[in-house]
Image (cartoon, rainbow, N blue to C red; front, top):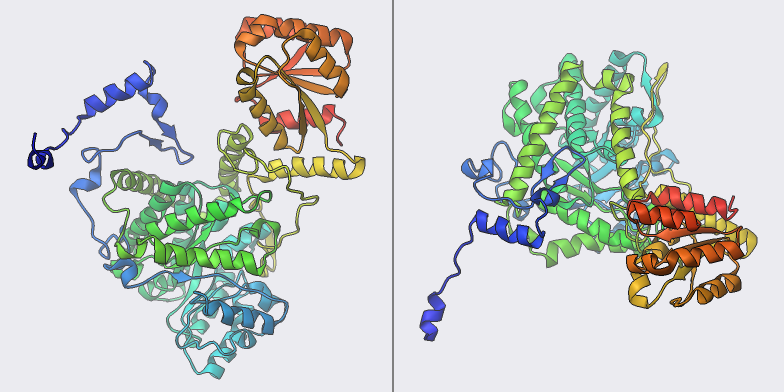
Length: 626
């Protein structure tokens, strides 16, 4: 065959049947259903997506056109690059202002500050000194302080003689969920709030002043369906309240910005942003308004739910992945939490890394050169369709039940989110979902004696004549591991040594290493150290190891063959010599073998289906760690 012939050769396109046959061979006769994955949203992910299975393949959408699934701009980031929203803070207005001016030289293009500064008495006009508001937009989630801070924004606008652009907004409903209170007179509250919104027209006609903070639901544990449906329901409630006050739907809708949390579920995050844009645009018809007024403005912020306190540099990987998904999904504003955000503080280095992540994504990934990078992906398109359908059905359920407020009053919304959070926590506890540095591959060198105080969810909303409601529980998934680990660290500080267990390794390293590594990882997640024996070839070596280490708990590690051969004899002899110690066994065994080993003296078996939290707490209790 000549070279010219080689150039014309093409590989035959495999059929779906051939692919399935090849997969079944790999699975060695097991069902292909094992390759399917169920999500928290109730969506089953298939192992393969094809063009014929995708509904959107036959009715393509275009970027910048209704229903805006693929973005609100025909040119994507070419026309409107996302804005870098990295709030800076400081003890004084001068310090915060200097940090912001420095950030502008390093890629920041929005004047963003936490509302906490204004609540502590810092004047906004001092924060924006030397910042040209004619050219630079602002971004502040005012967290219930919109009316309280209005005078400062008016004064700053007059002194700069410029109409502000950007976001000066709040979401009262989200703030009520945080404090656990609703106003008795809802009509009166919204009438006053909407008057304040109108006053902000004097600060800047193009300001976004209404925030739909769906990140609150996410950080409480909500899945993507809930986050979209609750967000749409809140937005509709605000629109209806605006209608009561005579505000035009078209102009009021353009004042709204949605804030979505983006987490490490990469493709679900992309689909969530696309589905939300589509559904919001479709709501224009219900209000008999042109869809162009319902182009969703999106602020994306990295997830607090998935942040970890230990091995905090892993958070850099998490937030980068989350930010990348947000950029592909299509956003207007992006906020990346510094890697030490979970500790309640920050520093210049962490802030620089977070800000530079924007620059790397913009300049080194070519993501800004492609309009809607996810468009045409059969997987993403179908996931978007399924998510949009489920979120729309959930939205209709809420609407039929009377809207979002009754759902919150009854505690139904809070309980629904709590159930998903519990499911997430359980999966982490059973290590079905990995949190690097926390429940898998923990770094024993990390030391955090006390959980940090954190006011990241502090609100400045004032509710007079309030009705008490169930507050939203905002807690990170990793907290359940961190509490146990800090308990072990306090024990070490008090007693001079970490809690320890011993590993009785059987036979050669090939036999015992896999299970020994598993036990070491599980116990390290709770701050428990392990002392390993060399491979014990005889009963005498195992007994000698126990005698020399004199610990309260041991775990036998070996292969199934080793357990069948002589584990029972070893355990029986150890228990005979040291009846007070507790012996566990690594790995799940067949029923008969479990009975044999249990009769020999094994207290319990630790394996991949073990609840790591419950097991570590049990070990600490047996070790006398209070």
